[in-house]
Length: 123
Image (cartoon, rainbow, N blue to C red):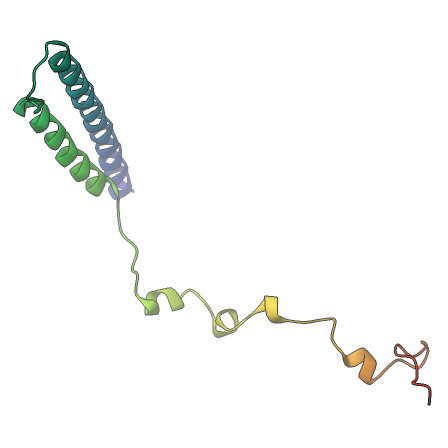
C-alpha cells in the first residue's frame, strides 16, 4: 500500500514538473516572437535569437522529457509470450466474423414440413 502511495506521489510530482516545463516552453516561444517583432520594427537584419531564449527552450524541453519519463510508471512486457499468457487457445483461434450461420445446408437437406426452397427445374 505504501509503495502505491509513493508511486502516486511521484506521478503527481512528475505531472506538475511537466506542466511547469510546458509553461516555460510557452514563455520561451512568446519571448522569441516578441524578440523577432522588436527586431523587425527597428530594422535589424540579423534575426538570430538570443542565447537566453534558446537555452530556456532547450532546458524546458529536457526537463519535460525527464518528467514524462519519470511519470510513466511501470512498463508492461511487450513479448509475445507475455501477451499469449492472457488468452486460452480457444480465444486465440476463435474467429467469430468467419462463422456463417446462414449456409447452404437448408438447400441440401430441406425440412419435410416446408416446401422446397429451390423450385424444381422444368424439362
